[in-house]
Each structure stands twice: as C-alpha cells, then as structure tokens.
Length: 497
Ligand code: NAD
Image (cartoon, rainbow, N blue to C red; front, side):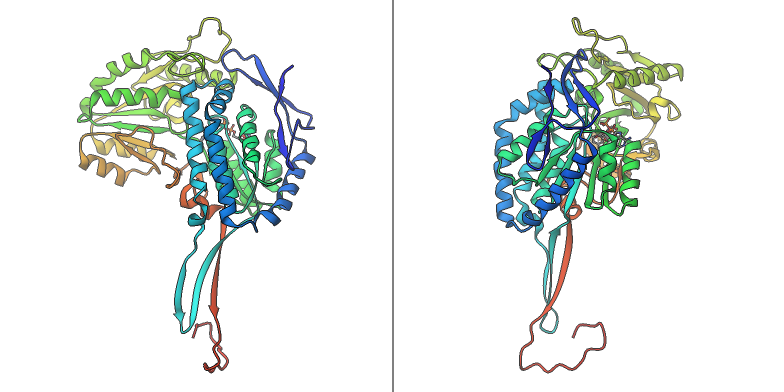
C-alpha cells in the first residue's frame, strides 16, 4: 500500500478530505513513493481556526517555556538528523550528503530560536521627560502562514515556523506538494518536543490552499519562498488583503572570477556551486563571469565539470541527483536547446545523460555554455538545473555593470586575491548577499537571508533580527507614576513634560 502523507490539523495527523490526490514520486525513476490527498477548503479553514484558538493561550506562555520547546525540538532534530535526511533524499533525489546539509541548515535556525528571550528584547530609555520613562515590547501577531518550495523541504520550513512560534505566534505551514514527507516528519518531531495542540498546523495542497491563506482575515503574516511568478502573485494578493508579506523568489547568481584568484580554488568551488543539488538551489551560481586572462581557465573548468557524475541518493560517488520532476527536466532541456539555437557555445551537454537501470528518471548531466550574452534565454531565465553559463569581460568594472543590470539580486560572489577588488565589489554590487572567495554566501541564522531586487518582495527578510521584526509588533509605552509632591496643571500640548 502506498504511504499516505498526513496533514497536521488541530493536533491530529490526518489523511485529508480534499478531492485532489497528488502522487509523490522518486525522482530517480518517477515511480510512486507516497500520495497526498490535498486538504479540503474546510480543512484549511479548520487549521486556521485551530491556530487562532491556540494563539490565545500560546501568547501567554512565558518566553522561557517557549524557548524550552525549541531546545527540545533542536535536540530531537539532531537526534533524527540522518533519518530526516534519508526521507528528504528519497523524495527529492538529493545525495545523502546534500540532504544532510539541507536538514542541518534548518537545525541551525531552530537552535537560534532557543535564544528567543534575548531576540525579543525591546528598548528602554529612562527620563525621556521629567519622571517619564519610555520602553518597548515585542508582541506576537497572531496566526502566521508559510508557503514553501520543493528544493529545501527541511531548511525552508525551519527558516519559518520555529522563530515565528518562539515569538508567540501560531503557524500554518503549506509545504511543497512535491516533497511533503519531510515537513510531515518535522511536524511530528515538533509535537514530540512538547508544542501544544494547534500551535503548528501543516496543510498539504496547491494553489487553492495558498489562496485561502492569502485572503483569510485571521492570517496576519505570510512568509513565502518559491519562483518569481508565484512570489509576485503571493506578495500582491497578500498585501492587497492587508497582510504582512515576505516573498523570497527566483534568482540568477553571478560569480566574478578575477585573474589573480587561485585557479584551483575557483574550479573546485564553481563546480559544486553550479551543478551541486542539480543546480536546484536559489543561491546556485548559474553565471560565471571571467575577467581578463581568467578566461583561460574555462577549458579546465569544463574538464572538472565533465567528471561530475549524477547518481542515486545513496551512491556515495554521485555528485548530485536527478531533477525533481519530468516537468523540471523538460524545462531545463528546452532551455539548453534554446541556448544552442541562440548561439551560445555549448562546451558540455548533459541533455542525454541517464543512469543505468533508472532511465526513466529526471537526469540531466553537467552542462556548460560559453560566449553567453545577456539577450539569450539561458541568461535571462532562471534555469534551475545543472547548467553553468560562462561570460567574458575585460575589467572588474564591466563585471560589476553586468551583474548590476540583472533584475535579480539574491547572491553573488567574487574570487580574487586582491582586497581592493573585493572591497570595490562588495561596495558597488547591487545584490543582497555577497561572497568573497565563498561561492554560496548563505548567512547563518544570527544574520538574515537578505536577497534584493527581483529575488525578494517585502522589507523584513528571513531569520536573524529581521525575522523577529517580521513576526512581531512593537508596542512602545510611555509611563509616568505621579508622586504627591509634583503639581500638575493640564498639559495642552503633545510635548512630554
Ligand atoms: P513554486 O513557486 O512552484 O512553488 C512554491 C510554493 O508555491 C509551493 O508550496 C507551491 O505549492 C505554491 N504554488 C505553486 N504555484 C502556485 C500558484 N499558482 N498559486 C499559489 N501557490 C502556488 O516554486 P518551486 O518550484 O517549488 O521552487 C523553486 C523556486 O523557488 C525557484 O525559483 C527558486 O529560485 C525559488 N527559491 C527561492 C529561494 C530564495 O530564498 N529566494 C529559496 C529557495 C527557492
């Protein structure tokens, strides 16, 4: 019998009552591994109502008790780390090592949530006027919602609900329908950590569930991660419905390679950053910009990329796994064909790659283009596959101009031995996350994940201090205690005296 993925509604794990049934498949051969019956509209409404009821008591739970739930949760996540990575690898096709990285980067955010009391601290100034003090508190918003993509089914839900809930909110998570088993396990462990009934809800489904979350009056804030088109839709619809929204969207990340960089470091780092996880990372390097003589390293980079072999999740020699779905593969193949047709030089073509015994899987081998120009589809569109586009420019200034013209601004990196070049790049580049000799600069949770431009809609970003601001309101109190000996007539102004 096929495994049934469970929703987590009002403290119960249930199979769902919606009409639509989605099959979860093994991306290595597209055979079914589980199915999920989408939540009915009534179930989504029920989850929101249960989260609203739970908020009334959860917001009164002392912050140290909320922190203790997070302490138990991060310990359970660590205890079940490899089990979670195995579930994740099987449903995404990621290699086991990469799946462990996905889980670990999520655990780091849950760890960060254990420090919630310090993170929530407000501000105080004594004597803002005579005998008057002003202080501020952070208070939770109510029911918050998260809508997550397929490519990090552990990390991205964990970016959201532990911090939101530690702040005193309750949370409805709508994970990607393509890999819902990992989020289900995250919810089971959260319950085991002692989270009270209703504090976390998980509803599986597609656009119809998302639309309820975007328009429901009891949802106060929406955190979304996914593609550009859906991100814009979520941001517009959510804000039109007067919600606080943060929407992390697609990307096209450039790595600039200066001729004074360490060649072997550049090659090693570019290989992993471009085709690792089959290029299905929002921070993957999809464009390598070679400055001046650095272009002479392109043939060696091609040789290194050609050695990467995709394979099954438990194949220790595999560099990465299959793409998530046949549709994702078809999209990548179409873009590779367009790249060739539009005149890019295809140095390495992974279109025909397959794995023996798994011919029906969503495989694409490492692919590399040179002489890519900004008018080509492979430059303009997010490919989200193991495809690296190479471009050549004369000077660092040309590279900066090129990157700044991109409509995206998620991540970028520069490889150089020059502090002056690195300083100029970090200062002038219009991208929210910059790596200097670090190819994928995803910040740890005490900072925030700060994509810019078309890669992010909203103002407060994920985790770090910005997430605390996103998931709370600030209440500012101005306070005076009268003493008998202070005479007071009417104060007819708004000045404090
Ligand atoms: P997606 O946009 O297809 O799906 C994301 C979520 O939105 C899923 O839960 C899905 O069910 C829901 N959804 C899909 N279509 C919808 C619609 N029409 N209306 C309402 N909801 C809808 O994204 P994906 O393919 O799962 O994920 C890959 C994308 O996510 C890539 O573009 C990648 O760059 C992006 N991403 C961005 C970041 C970031 O931090 N900027 C991080 C990870 C992934």
